[in-house]
Image 1 (cartoon, rainbow, N blue to C red):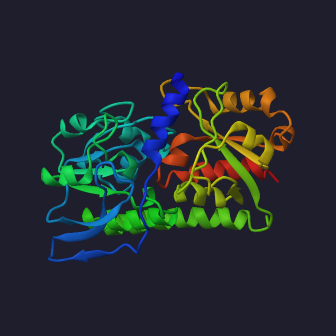
Image 2 (tube, rainbow, N blue to C red):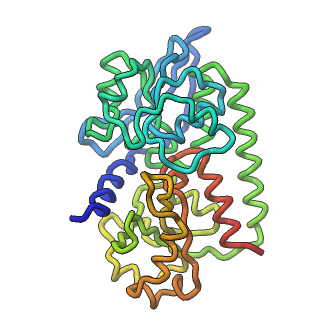
Image 3 (tube, helix red, strand yellow):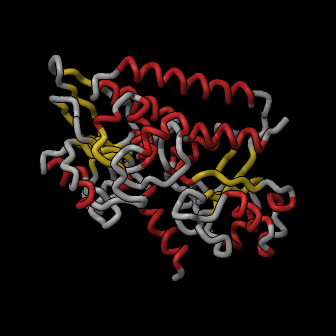
Length: 332
């Protein structure tokens, strides 16, 4: 199996989260103690279960398992609370890029449990799919909690999560770190941006179908159906796109993609990932792929690249990708 496909298979394990999305609650049990409902998943299980996390004190040494997770803390004024960050690839948020560059960046790629523990964290936080004991995971929630380390799994990153779950995360983090005023301010900025997208596209009544081609090598096309990826599918609905394969549990062949013939194809922009191929290069390669030449997305040149973190970062940064995609799809 070639390197690109191996990376794809690892990525799918990491981006998939399972569970049910329920109303988020925050409980203050004393003046300083905050209890939030969060998640845990047993090793080898595909099902997330709710698990309370109680914070007697504000976490002082946080490990964020991805760039988007760290950038959110920066917007809440918590730079000094970040002990380390992993998986630092992805399009940067320019408004906090200088602060991010000064953080303790533990690895350009996903970090393992040993690396996460190397900075003696009191909180490990971020994308749910990375809470695992595999080499690419920071450790399971239960194993970290057993060591006395608090955890916070992003609500947006488990099945049932949507872009609105980002607002739940901001609320809960505001409570945990006692920065609710900053959380409310940032949440308002995001909601205003989301409303602007909705207003811009309110005249677009037709929903187009799409498929996502997930690969780091445009010569090896792999269709990722994004089954149970509710956040992924929700953000694309913001630009009137419906994932044609969202209910497919198994592999989607290239022949099925061609036969089903969606209106739009989405590819990943890997430019920030270890000197990867840019979005423009990926789009050009797909448009010129002879195997896909009969598809209407190719004929109509409706192939668009989106940064990986905008799709699978499970954060507010997805708005940047959706705003850019909206401009490309509907320039008039």
